[in-house]
Structure formats: structure tokens, C-alpha cells
Amino acid sequence: MRGRFTPKGMTDVAEMEERGVSSAVDLRSDTVTRPSAEMRRAMAAAEVGDDVYGEDPTVNRLEQRAAEIFGREAALFVPTGTMGNQIAVHLHTRPGQEIVCEARSHVYNYEMAMAAAFSGCLVRPVASSDGRLDWRQVAPQLSLAAPYHRARTGLAVLENTHNMAGGVVTGAAQTAELCRRFHELEIPVHLDGARIFNAAAAAGASVAELSRDCDSVMFCLSKGLGAPVGSMLAGSRDFIHRARIVRKMLGGGMRQAGVLAAAGLVALEKGPARLAQDHALAKRLAEGLAEIRGVEIDPARVETNIVIFGTARTGFSAAEIVARMAEHNVLAGAAGPDAIRLVTHLDVDAAKIEEALRVIRAAIERA
Ligand code: TLP
Image (cartoon, rainbow, N blue to C red; front, side, top):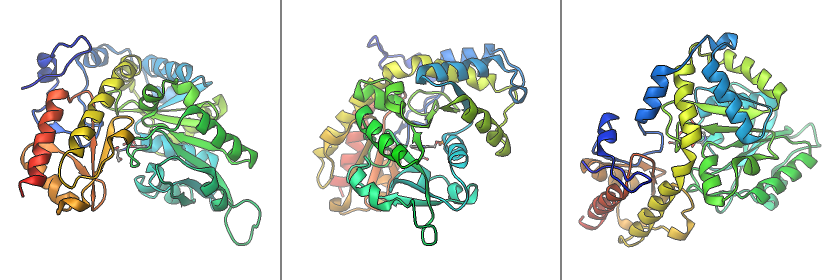
């Protein structure tokens, strides 16, 4: 089995085997990574207590570190990004309000309609060309005054990086400008920063800078940072106090969660430094894809670890290509009838990317 190139340029096959990383090239998501040996050691040694009583020292440390890194008063450990986002939606809105967000955003498309089911809100999606919200397109979709025809806009949700727009980054200045405009209208802003550390690595800005003007921010430990489980919600002390109650309502009070938080701490401290490697591999993947007949991709638009390419001109549906790839142990996800998403992460290396390119080329060209 080919190994991973460590930051020192050495192939760490033994560690990959120890972690049970399979020989498949799994590009379905950056959620598929296995915890590192260091994480597993930290989990085994974690000091724990009952977190519902606020007595788990490792969870408390993780929450404190996350708050510090984001320059916030407090943070909360939650099992998933979905729960973090939906707690924020619940706290910022009232039933019968609208939530404005980009049309491909996660909170709208992939959270099981929880904005409606749990918070009684309607999502008002705004289409954008590249995943970055443009105020000229947002403004006409807001509803503030006329109370008898349209529900009031109660919240804006931004997503950085934007997953289904191909991992694109919204810069600190653009985020600040959007927040300023929403706040002028008294609309709070929640940032779905599931991959905010990828955004920071690509933008050369800190996660604190990228999220500063947002009222709350959620980020995932379990994606590019490599933890097996967990996300964080950060905000003001009062917001996080109320978030803890909503987390309990949702069944997210996790008792001796220090075993998970221990892995999260390793992810938070060590994970960000290696994200640039994932971005370089995604760029190489996009360049290779651009040379395959019929594939629609602009490598210049690949900014982080997500590559989405169009298949409409290949003569095959995305599902057909994904199925052919899987026969050769290269796993991807269809992102629509004519689009495939590939995500790089710490369990793929340069050799695996070349292997994936060979398999994709064969799946499309040798029909
Ligand atoms: N995204 C998953 C799938 O649900 C699509 C993935 O494989 O990318 N916000 C964003 C922007 C996300 O991409 C995700 C997960 C979440 C929130 C939710 O996180 P989890 O899966 O922890 O609930």
C-alpha cells in the first residue's frame, strides 16, 4: 500500500495501516479520515467527567481553546456540524421567520429540513454565480417591513468555505461587508464554518478574522482537521449558555465526552497546519481532470480541498461514472445528475491522486 507523505516528506505507511486506512482512494468527503495514532493515544489517556454537569475537564479545555482561537467569549462542543448550525438557527430566529442563505448551502439542502421542523422557519435561498453571496442579489430577497404578506427575515447564514460551490473561500473583507449590511437591518449572521480552517489556509487570514463580525460560528473538527467526531459552536457567553440548553433538548448532552474532545484538541492544534497539502492535491486533481475528454472543470477556481466537475459532455451521467470508479476502488460522490464531487484529506497522498486520475480517465474515455 502506498503511504501518506508526512510534512517531512516521508511516507508513513505504518501509521496508515495502524489506523486501518484502506487501499481504496476514498474521495467522497474529508469526513472519512481515521484518527491518527496521536489522537488515539490522547483519547485513551483523556481525563473525563460528566459533561452534562460541566465536569469534563477535556471538553472544558477544548471549548476554552476554541473560544480563544476564534476570539469569542465561549464555545460549545457538539456532536455534529448539523447540530451546531441548527442550535444557532433556533437561537437566532423565532418560528414564522425566514432565513436567507446561498442556494447551495448546507443549512438549506442537507440538514433534513430542520430549520422548518425544529425552528419553524422558511429558508429563502439566494442563487449566486460562485457561492459567494452578492449583496445586490441578497437585498431584494430580504423581508423587513410589510407584516401581512411575507415573513420577516430573521437570520442570514453564510458558508465558508462553500461546500457545494466547490470549496470557494469568502475573504475577511467580504464577510465583514455582508455582516455590516445585515446588521444595519438588524439581521443576525451565523457562519457555517464547517471548513473555516480550509478558508483560513487559503486566504492567509486567521479563522478569527474570517468570522469576526458574525454573531455565531460553527466549525467542524471531523472534516479536514481529522477528528473522528465533533464540531464546535462559538459566540458570546450568553449565546453559548443558551446553546447548551438547546443542545440538551436535541439529545446532545454527551456525558464523558472527553474521550472525543481529546481527539478534537489534537485536531484543533495540529490539523490546520497541514491543510495546504490537501489544497495542493485538489489543485493537481483538477488539473488532471481538465485533460480528460468532456470533463468540465476550471482548475483556477479550485481554492481549497473540494473539486466539483461537470460530466454533461462526457456522454455519461455522474452516477454512471461514480459506479465505474467504485469498481476500481476510487470512491466519489455525485453532486447532482451531471456533477461529481471529490474531496482531498489527510488519508490521500499524491500517489492516490494520480491513481484516481487514471481510473477516472479510464471510466470516461475507454467507454
Ligand atoms: N457536509 C458533508 C455532507 O453532509 C454533504 C460533506 O461530506 O461535505 N456544513 C457544511 C458546509 C458541511 O459540508 C457539512 C457536512 C455540515 C455543515 C454538517 O456537518 P455534520 O456532517 O458534522 O453534521
